Image (cartoon, rainbow, N blue to C red):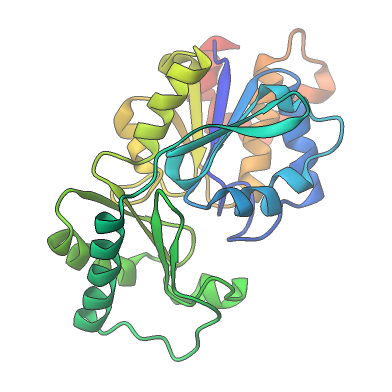
Length: 274
């Protein structure tokens, strides 16, 4: 039986750095009625508030929600009427300077200089430093066209791994590369969540759009969690419908029919537990 469903954010629950649409907000509210929900992403807490928290319906049972910015190096829960940090693991100054110098050198060496940039390309998120190829404020259509097959970022990633031994370097979102301390990735964050929530890893399911070697969702699979790979938020909504149909006691015929389109994708993970 699954007791917690964990999601990536960009590309899974919402388009890159865009707010959840109303349908996804309602889907998450429905899911929170039957199971705990965690969201783990490379974005910082401000991005979580803008993209996710502000878009949840008032009826959402947020006491059952776990929010994990910067790949799980921070954890927030809703306690006494407010979102409060449980922990935050921040870079030391020397680590931060070393990473920033490595980004400058890697971009010069690999030659990836975009003609159009919207905002800063490198963002210090305290416990994670993130490179966004087209800038932090790039429009979604430009971001989706820049590196759809991850080929460009794999070149930069390989260079950075040579320059930054002792750090984890993973691709995320549409144009991003995230740098954290070695061993700090979504597997690390989900393991920390196990300790904070008391929910075992085998009782968790992870849903993401980058569950492939080098993708920042892949560590969840390596950790041994059951995973469901999706291509976009539309597929995620279908998977949520299937999960609700499987986990809600005595599902109605209408709910089962509504979830049928997603059952083929989720049945291998959830079917035995329905």
